Amino acid sequence: MNTLLSQNHKRNILNILYEAHSPLDTNTLFTHSEYGKLFNDLRQKYEQQKTHAHLHATMCREEKRIHRNYRRCMYSLEKQECVQRTHTQGKILFTITKRGKEKIKQDTNIKTRHEPYIKKPAHYLTVVIFDVPERLRAKRAWLRCVLRELDFRMIQKSVWVGTNAIPQEFIQDAQYMRVLPYMNFLKAQNITYSTHTNIKSAQSAQQK
Image (tube, rainbow, N blue to C red; front, side, top):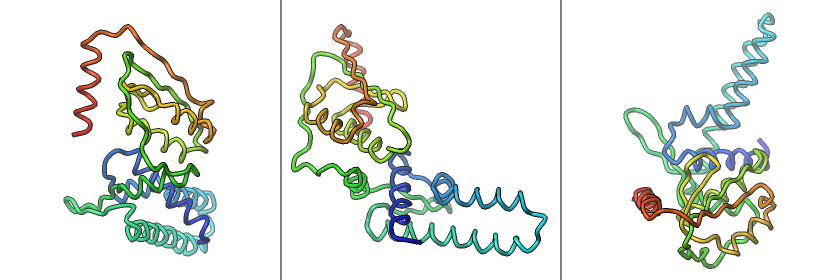
């Protein structure tokens, strides 16, 4: 497997683990990864040509090769301390680490900040809605990571709400990364105290 393809597969694994928000067992992770897609494509190709008996041995070798490359990929990510392996009830689980999240940010080609975005409470509720294409999944993962850092919470897959103001630096970075055209910002100034309190309570619960 060439280096570029290997890096793309690692990035794919990290994005899946990041967006999962919880540990994934190795079989589920394999199924949703690019390795799983390669495996399914191989199976479909074999089903279309299964009348040729000699292809069965070839398919078995290719399946083993795909699984072997997947294990090598996970071992490499573990060695780089980007993922953590745990064993629970006979299952192997993987979780993305802090270093893995940082790697996602670096892979989006944005300069790492010396300081995080400054969080400033606003007197209104901010709603961020975005629809970033699948081909920009790494940048979409960066966007979600930043929104979490700003204490926003996800109410739907691409709809986030928070009580902090959106930093101008974040807008500039989103424009630099060319994801700003896929984003919409809404302000709700007339919100009740109970709504504001519920948002804050939900954010505190998530941080715990």
